[in-house]
Length: 125
Image (cartoon, rainbow, N blue to C red; front, top):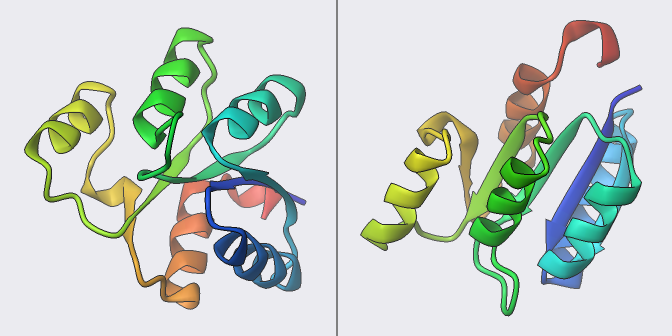
């Protein structure tokens, strides 16, 4: 069973995603905000991260930079209400992420599920 870490600063989003993904057969860890997310990354072995881009204090970009610094190699799906900020898109590209790694809000749960499954090796789904 794949273990997914969901990092978002909105409790309601965490709750919805956790309930849905657990129902779909995944083990889910949630982290409220980027700081808590980095702590979870340090203390947990996860197969995939679902990461909100816009968070106060420690942003999604900050979390992605921390992943790179720690040489953590796991797939990431990035949640974004809008990626209209040119600098943000450039930073994602610099960090090796593409449009395929981005899920736009509002989230269609079944589209998200397809993306999650496409990012994970078949033997752990």
